[in-house]
Image (cartoon, rainbow, N blue to C red):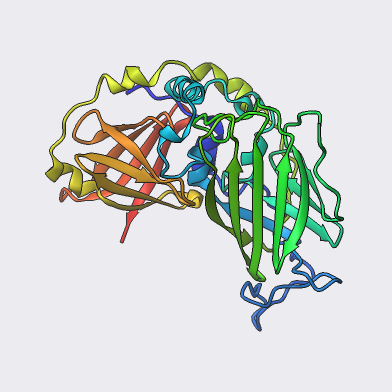
Length: 349
């Protein structure tokens, strides 16, 4: 089975969290009697009484990094956008600017293995991304620029609605992709983020995408954001993608032509949850007579196509999936087969 895969995705399946300042306790955070971080402690406040969003965080948005629209159908896109999206997805997203070490734009931080750090003061919040450019969010009453020079990360202003920080961003260039699958956007894109800190260690992030030149209507996705204690960001340099780009060749149709029919009775034996290391739980379900996989953090179901009774192809990731049985014939794990190597996911109850 020939497979093609993003190097960054494969690395995330096989290594721990990217940035680790090992065993250095975060100063000033609440702790339990045994010294562990108390992530359910009350939300800290700024000097003006508003919630303080400062800290090192991780967005639980892996699934949306692959499919920013969730379960929406592609018919929400205008015809020109549909054609561009089809071309990108059919060629395994070879032209993704992020695969060429360029900024990821609005999707920065959604990949789930990436850490980000928020430095928050009443008039300004700065978001530092481990694998992307920083952002400044001005909370001082200024408006968005009227005719900005298009930027990779856009321009952002914030305001409070109760205890929720609402961030409006616009002025993006149209060179970034909204997700790894290749959903496009224009320079008319407007992104609204709503950060609600529920307690010390947990936030909810709602993101609304509005781009009338590309999509028929706006849509909103919701993700959890988790505080990561006793660590910090480390330097990240985009280098491996330069080596792995030559492997990103071919078209999905090459693998789809190998599709075979597998009995529903056999497919049903693969349905369940599989733990893929630090990435989290992959959920396999049966959608009609076809398997589908749900990645952690949302993004909806991704179709999986059979190439034999045990080997399948996941086109969104350009990855092979093989189910492995024990000596008694029970399915115990699955293997994600990539150009960088195989990654095991163990079946869990």
